[in-house]
Amino acid sequence: MSPSAATSSADGGDAPERRRRPTGPIASIAALLVVAVIGGSVVFLSGFALGARVSTTPGTPADQAELWAPFWDAYRAITDQFVGEVDERRLVEGAIDGMVTSLDDRWSQYLTAQEYRDSLQGISGRFSGIGAEMQGQPAPGGEPCTPLGPGCRLTVISTVPGAPAEKAGLLPGDAVIAVDGESLDGLTADDATGRIRGQKGTPVTLTIVRGAEPARDLTIVRDYIARPEVQSKVLADGTVGYVKLSGFSDSASKAFAAAVADLAGQGITRYVVDVRGNPGGFVSAARDVASQFVASGPIYFQEDARGDRIAVEAKPGGAATGDAVRVALLIDGNSASASEIVAGALQDTGRATLVGSRSFGKGTIQEWLPLPNDMGGMRLTVLRWLTPDGRWIHDTGVEPDVAVDAGAAAGEASATGDAVLDRALEVVAGSTP
Image (cartoon, rainbow, N blue to C red; front, top):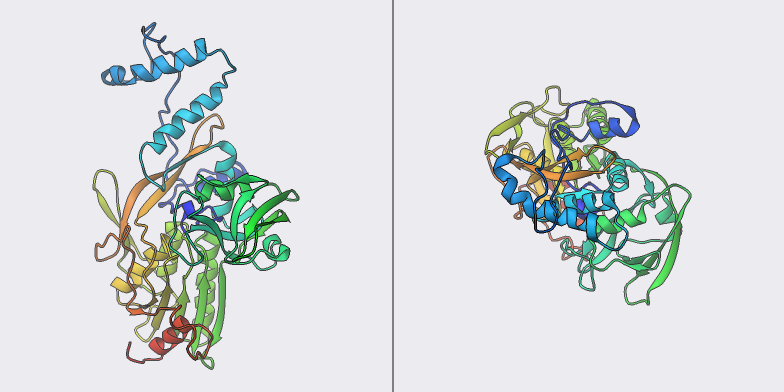
């Protein structure tokens, strides 16, 4: 899920290695994402009247009673004295949201129950929506930005072939400024794309700006979207295998492994792997993808809040780990998270030459933590990840070995119509980078 804060795939970041907790369809999806459910949740048992403590607060640690006293005073004042209607569920949601917001971490977020379910569907590779990848950008092709407003528009990056967005005429580069008549100003891209998603068969009206044209409305009927995350073909007269990877769901990593195995079975030893525009997904899927080319050793390191670091090793049995294999990995400014794990692993181990432009720069991993009583959940930053050489690429990105300015090269003669791909084909053919 460009980055989860920035894409309609609701990637939002990556999930660490997982424990299985299968109970029902949503829980089975959550099991793919969550390392451990929250234990010892805060219990709202007792509080304070404004200005005077009326009882103790079970659940509040004794050594933090003074710290929490203002919170309970405020909570009890609202529930006892506010003259309007009080929705206590919304109070609790607001309190959790406030705690997460106070972390000042763009990748951590509180999600209501419906938002949490929608996000899990999106990152699993199948969801109900319009089938468009979107990101906050100051202008088409610009660096990701937040929050949305006049200088940061929700911009269409791509549409899924055959999906409602494509059929309705939504185009890459279109800026979405309102949904169902409500402005998106002040929202994150995640919040905005959450408004665009919805149940299959229901309409959503997007107000879009296309180039210098005046704003206009486009009504799209939502449907189930199965995002095609892997495409492969043979190039250069049958000598190079090309695999495009647009996401990192479990199904994508399996499809990627199958594609590489099929190409290897045809005798292919030259590969171009394209993760341009790939916002990321499961870190376990990133490990599986990189392991197709890296036979052994660390793919990346995980570092927790205490500074403890562990190595995540390559999975054995990759289809293209031989010494004769040459790989070029295509990256750009929208290659993020899991894409960068793969890029860092292949670069540090010498298994691939990176071609294109500097990647996004997201070096953290988020857990998806469901909360009890159908109170939604959190996407919480819990780990840093580092490349096999110990590099933390957060906010700096992964630099390509062969830099290609696709915009500057767009007018040049091209064998494929793609200057970055042209250069990658030269690299794997054995030309000097």
